[in-house]
Image (cartoon, rainbow, N blue to C red; front, side):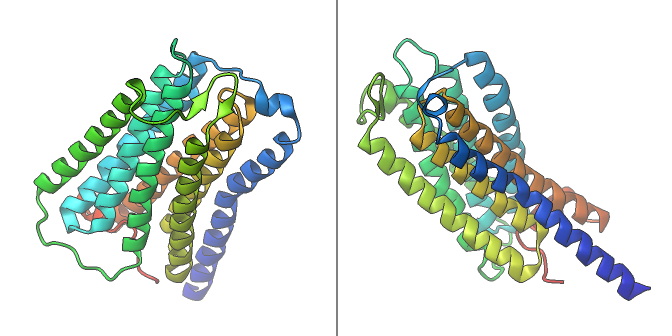
Length: 288
């Protein structure tokens, strides 16, 4: 009976893993199809209310909750992976919030595009650092203290604020010119972000396969969705159907990141761990 139970759990996990990957395939297929229709790529249908409802709200919620869990994990175990992941979520979430609030401003879409793109670049660096740390041996500080967390969060928020100021005061080159489209600077930033997130996703998915970790797999798929979303926004006019597909893909990707955290917390709590100990086990499930 024990063998049958274990086999059943393995089968269920396999099917769950395949089902979790379906949105990634769906977004990839949608991108290929939509690219064939110029009206869906080049015609803007921007709506501030839709941006706030379908973009800012889910992104803010998922980023804040995921960052909170990650930082609790860092305080419990002192593992750098939690600190990097939490900072990445804060950077991406803050960038999304600011860009969503200013997307319909009189200055045009450039400021919002600049803030979003540079914030995503900052977040992609953090997520890659988290992915690299996830594959390293377990070695954390016994008592990291809250000071490191506070300094890290303040640092990320300050950098995001500087990005906003740089966009508003023209301290950086234009990322998007109304009537002309995207600039080479924006394409360079997005290409670099896509490359870094792709590397992070690949590392996490490889580590998930090695450990048999569903949480790592979901996190890797979440980064894959964010990467596909960046590809969409990089080739589409802001507010177009393809651009909205990219935005929703990024929002769903962040929800995946939160889902991975929640899955680990729930499983660990069922084993009798408190929330800090459960969060400390994030990324570090055993191979059994």
